[in-house]
Structure formats: C-alpha cells, structure tokens
Length: 326
Image 1 (spheres, rainbow, N blue to C red):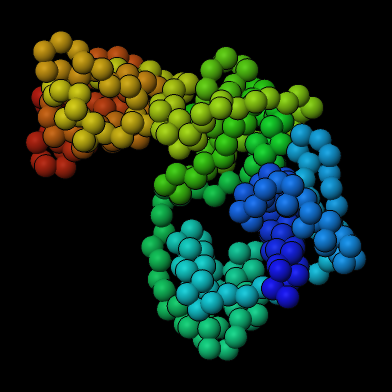
Image 2: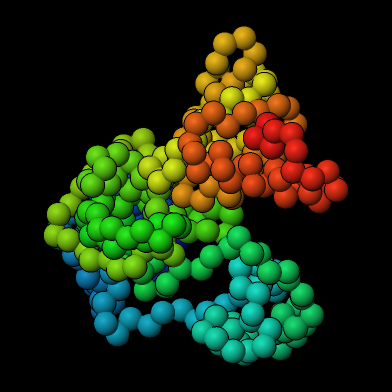
C-alpha cells in the first residue's frame, strides 16, 4: 500500500513545485524532489493521467507550467512569516502606515486575509512602528524594474535611455546580467556595448527600456554582488585619483571596494583610482579616512573636496585658511 501511494505523493509535490516555479525544467524539478530526471517526468505523467493539466514549453527557456483550471493553493502565512513580511515592507517603504499607495494597499489585503490572531499582531506592528526615512534609498519605477528583471531572466539585450547624476543623457545597448539591490538602491549590472565594458547603472535613472531580439550568455562564474561592488566606481563622468598615507590593507578597513581600485604607491602609501558621478558625495566618503590623503587627480573632485574642507573648517570658527585638500 505504501509503495502505491508514494508516486502519488511525489506527484503532488511535483505539482506544488511547478505552481511555485512556473517554467521549471525537468532537471530542476528532479533536483527539487531529490529524484532522477526520468522519475520527475514520470510524476508529471501521473498528474496528467489524473486529469491535472501540466503544460510543457519547448525551447531554451521552456519548462513545466500548471495549465488552465489548476487552482493554486490558498495563501497561508504563519505568525512568524507574516511579522517578518511586514517588517521587511516597513524597512523599505516608510509610508505604508497611512493606508495610501499601492504597497500599503497590498499589505492591507494580506492583513485582511490572515487569521484573526495573526492579523492582530501584524496590524499592531504596522501601526506602532515608526521607521526613519532612509534618505539614500531610491525606489525605481516598478515597470522599468520588471522589464529589466525579465530581460535578465530571458537573456535578452536591451536598449536604454540613461540619465547620469549630473543630468547628461545618452542611449546604450546592454546585455543585462543581473538586477542587484544594495543599501536601498537598485542597480543593473550589465555589459555595455556602448563602452565595451562592464557597467553598473542605477535603475532609477533609466528613462526608458526596450527589449531587443538579440540574446546573450552571461559569464559562467557570475557573482552579481561581488562584481557590482568591483565596478561601482567604473565608467562615471568624473575621474578620481587620491594618494593616501597608509598601506593598502589598512585603507581597505576604511573604504568600501565600490569607491575604486586600491594599489600600493611606493613606501607605505596607497593610490585610490576610479570615477564618480557625484564628486561632492565622493568627497564626503573620503572624510572617514583617519590618515592624511591628497586628491591629486580629477579637477571636479579636487574642487568639491576643497569646498567641503572649507565648510568643515568654517564650522569650527577656523576660517578658510590652510590646505583643505589634505
């Protein structure tokens, strides 16, 4: 009896996996169930024999999908899951307590669908929490973000209209490798055919996007987060060249990799090189260095560092004398 029920139980698990991941391939389904690919295909056949519609899509991006008429399971949250979900929403959206806006509306629907005991805890958390606004966080257009994520998944080239922090705009064709969220900002990690190099673009600065018929293959060993940090200081409008009076290993403790490349520069000095789209913001990041440094390259960064130094010096009543570039 147990042997007869096992294929049915496995088939139901297969259906759950197909509903959770539309387009799942046979090998991915097999891995999820812990069986061979042949066995996974057999469980799909069991579902079809039982009258449950499971569609097979051929091609590079094909896979299994639940057909029409297959009802999805009800949305169920435990108290822990619901509380974590609300905390995540509050962390990213600080205006959901007043009930307006699409995110607040969606959260309200989820709360109303929860059991009374869970909903009471969730609603109390939603109304009582007072999250502080993250001024650095920027929320991009959802339609643009969805289009880029879809292009990444389908490995389709895109044509973008992009606006820099300084207000310049240009068009470029890009192979979108990944969309990465970092410290409240959304980035597109891509290969730019305009510059012939890897670029990181702010999704909120993408003015328009068109998906092209061309396809591409991303790097086999792609680590989106690591590569994003390595290239955040590459390809911007203003050059950066800074000499720091400390060895490379020590400087790495003060500055994130996203600010640029660190290299030894004779003796115990370190050279920081890269680019930035916002020289004043970059100058502010340099103020955390607890040792001497000099901005030797990039006239825009030199000027903004000088202005920032004069402001800080004036705040102490020291006037504008000295060398604020140091």
